[in-house]
Every structure is written in C-alpha cells, then in structure tokens.
Image (cartoon, rainbow, N blue to C red):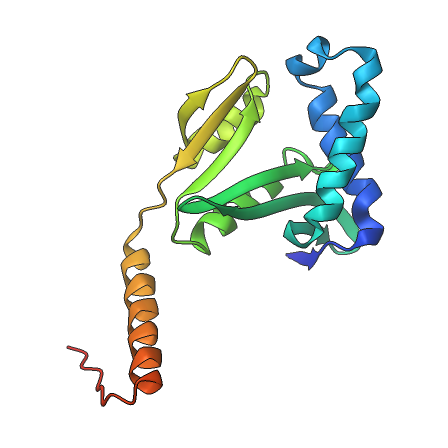
Length: 178
C-alpha cells in the first residue's frame, strides 16, 4: 500500500532532480544550447516552488517510490508530472497512480509526454488516453474519463449545489429520489 503525502518546500530538490531526469532523457534536450541549461534548471525550480501544493510524494513503507503533480486544466485535470523512482519501475506504481487519479476524478484527464518515452506512451494508451495534439518532441494526450459512476457523482454535486442555493435564498426544497 502506498502513502501519499503533499509535497513541502523541503522536497523541492528531489522533485527538481526527478523533473530534470525526465527532461534530460528527452530528445528535446539535444536542441537546447549548453548555455541555456541553467535557465531550464532555474525555470523548473521556480515552477516547482510556485506550484508545490500540486505535488504529491508517494511512499511504500518509508521509501519514496514516485512523485506526481496534478492541476486544474480547462475542463479537466492535467497530470503535470509522474515520475517513478528507478528502483520502483516495472512494479505497477505508475499504473496504480494513474488508475487512482482516473477513479478519483470525473473530469477529463490530460498529460504531456515526450515522444521518445515509449513506456509512458504505452502506459497512458492502456488507460484510454488518446493523442490530441503533437509537437516536434511531445504528445498531448486526453482521457475523456467517462464512466458510469461519474453520473452519480455529478448528480450528487448538482443536488448539493441546489440545496445550498435553496438555503441561501430561503426556498423550501425537498430532494426526491426515485
């Protein structure tokens, strides 16, 4: 079983290392001038610090096995980062995390992956992500996340909203469930 904790500022260095590992293993990095590498590192660190609330640290017992970040994006949720530690790869960690993100949300899910990351491409396709856009080095993928339970979640949210409005405007409202 995994323990998922919100990242804190003390975690910035490890998150940065993971994010840079993803970037430095992409084909895109070959196009970046060495003089611009420091800018990439600084930009990544700034982004992490500004969005630390979006990052989660995933532990199995006391071992850090993965890091991920999600954030609101248009009509859905963006999986901004999903990094599995090298010693934990091929053990189902990424599958479990993606499955968990899908099951806990009813909105569409989005992710950017590098084209040369065949493992990630195969994994996201396995979970019904489809390529929506393509750049020279990356795919932008979407999972519409349509499942039967979404209707129940949406209905409950709508009912809760109606109840709040009824209370706010002193309207007598009775919920009828058939």
